[in-house]
Image 1 (tube, rainbow, N blue to C red):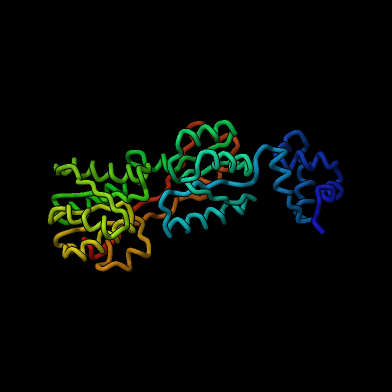
Image 2: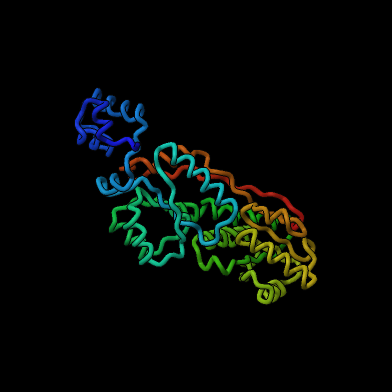
Length: 317
């Protein structure tokens, strides 16, 4: 039989309303002894508050909504797994939604789920930001943070370009992924490549689009001059570039150098093996969790160190 708040109240020797107040974050109006009695009764009985009821009482649920990046990869699943475990330790659950959801469907999800906070791993258009503001939902805009100049995504592009330059490529190009559209992460990586070219006194990088379709990608790779170093949006983009190069007879790495991003299993399965950029995990999941749990974080609260990137040398450069 499911343990009820009435059972907790009887065990703690308090009223049911007192249990409700304390479990819904309003325990400051009661003595420490009363709060301890309720918490002890909860632990002894294994009571789990009904999430829907708590959402109605507080105007928010125990859900954290994660807005997926436009082109998620296998590394993202590791992040989601870690977040799921970390949040569960604090009684929270992770809910995910696609970044391509329409503003209307996004608004319906926010209304139904009443998330405690939204973690944005993709750019949020103004229409969705309006929905969140109207609902009073906090947002941790990670995609925006890591895409600033000097941020993690920008550094990945800069590292790609610096590596290609160090390997002797004097003409650089950037391969966009059509699926990523004009996402903030794509723009940041491309900007990192551009600034590396400028710092090295090279021409601006030539920009091509890879659609993961052989007919289009063959033309895109063939348009690159011999001796180009190609920085790609991610490993999928790079793998498509390598496949196209093989078809048109472009020798890698002598005639074309290729660098991906994300260090996914794809990077180990290409021929030649792909040089890529790997992202380390955030240095402190606890810091991120504290921000999620804090109902009133300071205005200048930092997301902290969201990880580092480093080169994984393959045979494509």
